[in-house]
Image (cartoon, rainbow, N blue to C red; front, side, top):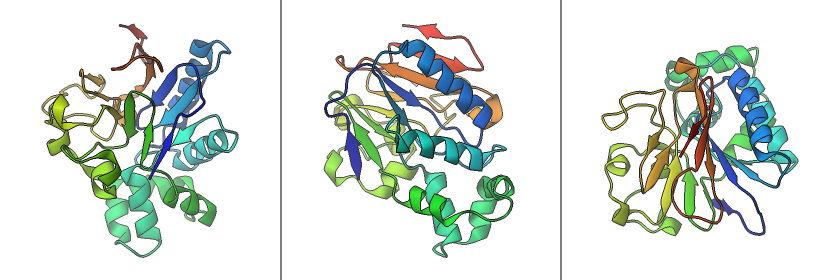
Length: 234
């Protein structure tokens, strides 16, 4: 279900939805390294590595390597779950294809490796530090963290997006929703006292956003790294 930040130190870098944009992911990784300046830090990917963008296979290989050497924590997104379900017979392939899976299949040359599907299927849904919860889509308001289900973590939108601070167990860092009524510009993250939405629609806007969080302090990011746009300080 989850992973945590036990015995780690330094800032935490949370990366929004990549969606096949290997070019932006590489820029983000370099930006994280430059910002950290060789000091200890952690990286959390918020899911949706695949679909819509041109190089989902390359993105998956990149984050798998980062995870394998202990350089990153990778969470599951709804697009990873769609892909697994479609290719393992639990859902119609046409459903996945219609949601960007055609671009993913093309990046794999038409055949997805079983190792990649096994990796996606096993990804955790949430990650925690002392002050925040990291998840792809969000959490069901009013439900304890240990009782959250996969449907909410991967798919929830309106009920979570409209929730107040008192309905969530901690500050929630998430992606999944590049724009909605409360976030009319998909290029901009949504920064609220009780949650941070880092999905800036990388596949369509050309902007991949990384939030930098102070491990020792509660709340949202202390700064943003915008790959495709200038950094912002808070």
